[in-house]
Amino acid sequence: MIVSNPKADDAVEAALQGSPGTPRQPSLDLDRHWRSPPDRVTLSPAYRQVDVDGAAVVEIALGDHRLRLDQPVLLEPEIVPKPWGREIWHTGIEARGESRVRTNAGTLPVSQYLTLAPQRLTGSLPLVLLKILDPRPEPVLGDLYFETHERKQEVYVVTHVDPEAWPDGRGRIRFGMNQALRARYGDDDRFRADYLEAVRRYERVRRAIDAGEAVPDGDEAARRAAMEAFTELRELAVGDVVVVPTWLPHSLQHGVRVIEFQTPTYERYIISFAQRVLTQNHWDTDKAVANMRLDAPPPPRFDAPAAGIERIVGFDDFRAWRMTLAAGESRLLPAHPGYLLCMAVTGRVGLDGLALDPEQAAFVPGEALRGPRREHSARLRNDGSEPAVLLIAAPDL
Image 1 (tube, one colour):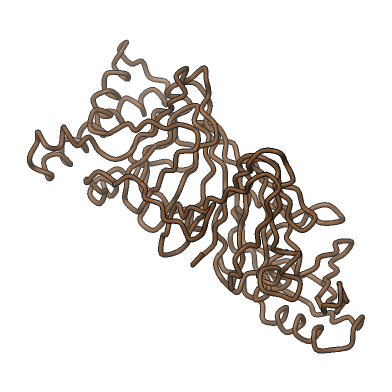
Image 2 (image 1 turned 90 degrees about the vertical axis):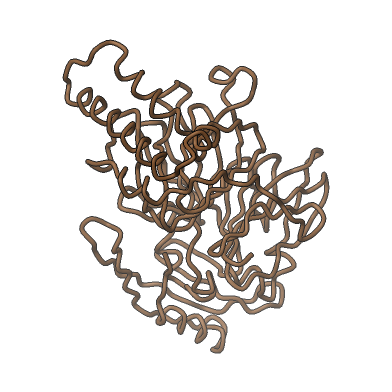
């Protein structure tokens, strides 16, 4: 989502141009259209200019919360249960829950934080969705929906492979279609048609089971195997990157935990699922199969903007880097015009007084990246004795 509030942006500029210590106190309306039913909350912040190390910065008071626009903030995740496990949202803003930012007085919803100064915090750019997918370790029960997306693009970085689920350390993702079987068909229309029929046959037995009806022994497993024969499984190990473009069918498998950055939209088309779908009462098989990519996706290719940095994905709506900091190394984040999301993968990463342990994330506002305190507020540090790895994402990174 893109947060916009001209009154808040005007208050920030007035505080910077006015006398230090003189508060500006606008009333800000936040329309929470993502809630069910939609509602509105009114915020009453106070903006004032303060001196920090000789630099004029804006401090915002909202109730007991005190926030400076030049400081990164820790993201407090929202845990969302799923039939296959759980999602851990670090920037989620949705009817089922909302992530928060940590402040001196507790936590504040991300939407309220961004409303306080949209231009200075984000450059009015959409907030990339950052979350962790944490499937259960059991086969089938921990397998995600086999689905595809029309607009949403995703990138996964594998952080854990359950040793009981995958003793050799190689997990799986169902990723695209079976190219050998497709070649034997020699006719993509017939391949799609037969796959669609296999999914429909499986859906019938799946719905019978969900309705409590008796099903012959082995029928569900046989139909599921026939359906899945049309798809491809790809091996995954810790550190692997999976790039998921639009219309590519995919399903992360049980026991494989990943960090995910994605286009901030929740649209999807479910092709199939080996459990009851709780979030909608239908599958989207017809449209998904008609539009899904059949060609095998190429392996990810990384370029290196600088030493110690890999650009792991370069979508049109967001990009992501993987950065490695040597023991004792410090490095400035890029002077991005919007904002950056940072998540530690290994080691402990320091950032302007914050300490990011593995799978902890920070929102770095634009004012921290390009403001007068950039040398402090945008500097990463690895004070440990081992290399530290972190992921960074933003639009146009």
